[in-house]
Length: 292
Image 1 (cartoon, helix red, strand yellow):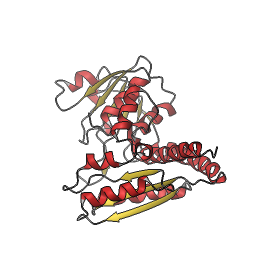
Image 2 (cartoon, helix red, strand yellow; image 1 turned 90 degrees about the horizontal axis):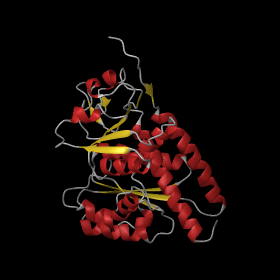
Image 3 (tube, rainbow, N blue to C red; image 1 turned 90 degrees about the vertical axis):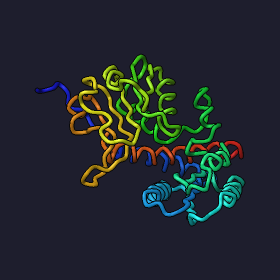
């Protein structure tokens, strides 16, 4: 059966490149006033995926003209030692953003580590102060992945006012902040999760669907309203070992109006928004120092 839709692809690589170019321009302007934005990335242990993510983040920083410091520690590092290092970075005027790559080894309390980061340097947007600022609509740092998703919707000129957005996944890193950001743009938001009784009934009503559970094929073509915008946050491997998302891309693209691919969708935007947050932290620091 033919369908009137073949989804337009929202190209995360292209949008991320534009974003990084803007960051590079604003970074050069800051440097002309005597301040270089600095990001410290802390990696504990030897998780292979984390090593790839960290390398990509550091490279993106360097390419955009930011000062980047990568600190690698063995998995035997104690929680106290990590907290002590974060305290040192909080006081370092050359560092504007601190990122501790998750997951951490089991003996380290990730929540305690995140809360040790100064909210002024919380460029991941995971601190309780950042979450609270998002909740009440005050300035703060938005988590990079949902922030990137919002920029993707903005890039296609999508007006969320009055639209029904369904978010699948309720994590503190993506699902919950995503719902709040959509709400700020006057969408009507439904937040679905593992205990949702009838996911398909929810998604069939949606104008926008954000899939963020880390589970292959959680969203299939029969669950999508024709013309809906589908944002795929998932990062999984298929049976052949290839990277794929939470969405059955081949099927859903025949029904949706817009769709993000995996890879080349949300992933590059997540890193781009980390650069934006680090730059904004540095710009706030410059204003506080009277360097404007």
